[in-house]
Image 1: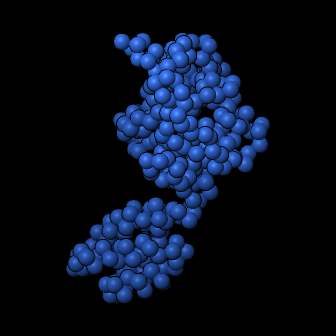
Image 2 (image 1 turned 90 degrees about the vertical axis):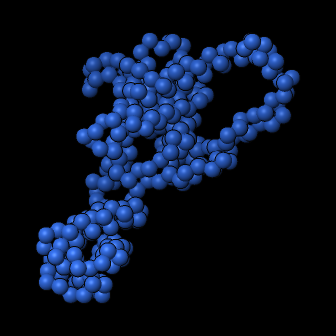
Image 3 (image 1 turned 180 degrees about the vertical axis):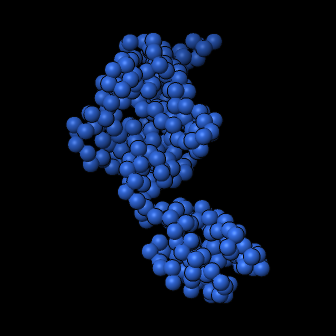
Length: 291
């Protein structure tokens, strides 16, 4: 999932958080929290007499200190920037226990990262390549915009060959378990064992000849405001002998079921086009059909 996918037109780098990356990702938040602390009642009078540029410089300098730093070392940095003041020891302790907490990585972060929470920032392209790797048995493929170039007569002028850039270090039985779980997400409509699959309603009534496996997801920006959620669905089809992987991402999509509905339309259209184009041998034949 991490890094660039290698797409010819360029793409945004995806990343998964961890202890080393956390301080970098949270730096803007730590700076903001330190500035808020300066306005806290015990310290507001002192920092009110410090110009804004100096306050900003101090906040940035403190934010760049290592997580393991002591309060005495924090005090020293504060003195160097703004001088000594009554309450500096308490201020240093508050910086360490408050803003600096945002930089710490705990075992809880490790667990939630495994479910796509915490510091996980990935693109739809990275996720679809990830799902394709699950579907194909663990091969991470190079991504490309163009599959092939075909002449009007139906001759293949150029074709992009799949290139394996990595292989998942995972037991085959674990991959099969993941695929089965994804199949149940779409197809299990029973209420036993925790309820129906989270995408079962979006794919209800699908042509039984089309088999799909997938996973829903809801990326929360603010748990109290559903409208800000990003809705996700990722899947592959057919379940046996997969041909394509599909990912749908809807910013402000509220709930993952909305992404599932869009993914279903894409998959149905894929099979419609596949079945239609297989009847024709040239581009002209297909164009005649459109007319």
